[in-house]
Image (cartoon, rainbow, N blue to C red; front, side, top):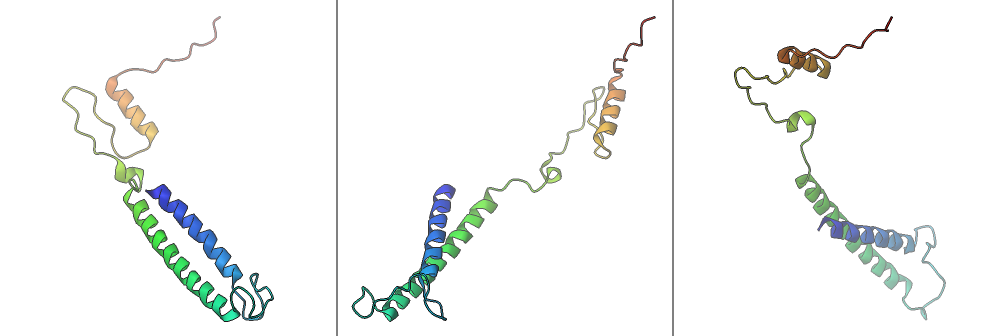
Length: 129
């Protein structure tokens, strides 16, 4: 659904840019201001009205798709931060290793776990003499 809306949104954006570029500027002619008089396909006033309507319709569709996409994105968004998404740890069973304290950095937590388990890290052997 989201992919389809993104494709529609991009098509509307490209069409909106093209329609805006085809309109006459106030100072003269825009990209779509080719010559031709009454014998042309559309008169100047009819073309301006059609382009103005097309711009309004495309702008409305653009805003609607933008709002729908933002609502879909906010609904499928995960937790805001690691702290908000962290599940609380259950208390440890008596006699078993307990969870590290919530405060401190990772190194402090690893030291605390090491002290609780009683294991000593392997020490590097010195030079053999």
